[in-house]
Length: 137
Length: 141
Image (cartoon, rainbow over all chains, first blue to last red; front, side):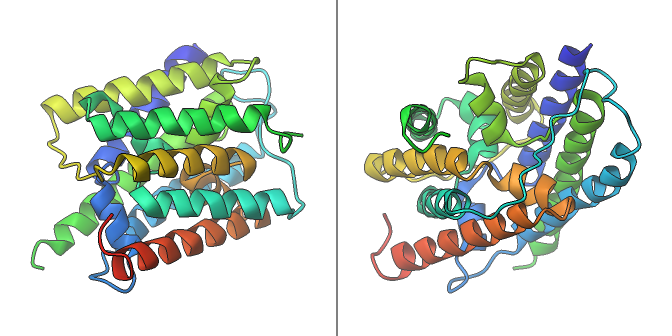
């Protein structure tokens, strides 16, 4: 059952990324380019996505366990540390370089676009690199 | 300029769908719909069926949707150095910082997590700074 609900969630997520045009790096860079012809679309996407989630957190707290899994896997860390800041900064630089973050990269990989294939392979390499790095605690 | 409102509307509708998908995943699978975290889980030794199915849905449904129902123009850099560097930084950075636009940005901020709010401000700032430097001081990549 959790396979089916996971599949539905991933599918809806991908359709949302496509309709909102977040799969187009040019649109994302248009948002990040505050000194150019600024494109606010990403702001509407973030706002639209946060609304259902914001409401959901109230109701989720009332559940003992998720409907199709045995327990919740919600991050409990509170501390602001160097890893959080450094990681986010590096991610930001990479995101700003190309205009693609992990979600859209996977949603659009099926187009077979060579640039996307290079990006995703490199992104996975970056994740594997982290796995073997001393930063993984 | 006159077709801007349509793009905003599509952004809002697409965003709502992303939010509903994340909420659905949270209620049924009990997890954060953060794509870097889900992909990271797939590369770890403790693979989870929820993560696997989420990624299959994300990749295959988007491909089919784009091919038959929604034409998307994807304009992406063709500089392989930029693509390699950008990919490495996104991959390594999201794992080190424990999240990306979906995990920290959407799920974390809506939960009012201080870590996620700080992470999102950080990557937004550095992304904007990078675009500012590359687009206005180095010419197009």
